[in-house]
Amino acid sequence: MSKIKKNDTVQAIKGKDRGKKGKVLKVIGESRIIVEGINLVKKSMRKKQQDQQGGIVSIEAPLAIANVILLCKNCNKPTRIGIKVAKDGSKARVCKQCKGTL
Image (cartoon, rainbow, N blue to C red; front, side, top):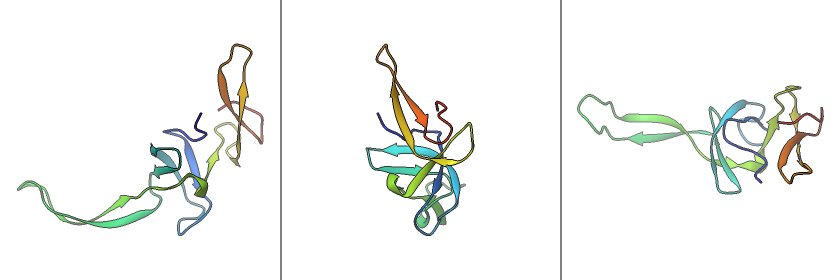
């Protein structure tokens, strides 16, 4: 079970965007994610159609999951995540700060 999922809110803890918050747009494998507004890089784009404009655009580049920390929805604090297994075998992510489920 992956600890960070799509649409989670995370905060960068390392790198040039340290302290910025954003929503997870995509999880790539086990170790990389794309976060909205974090790790922006400039990329040259060719115009594909007559009405579309080419030039230099900013896009989000993947970054390591180890460089972000999840923000709890209940307490709005950066927190580590635990996994709680219920009696029926289902798993749930748990906030280590407030003990609430995510």
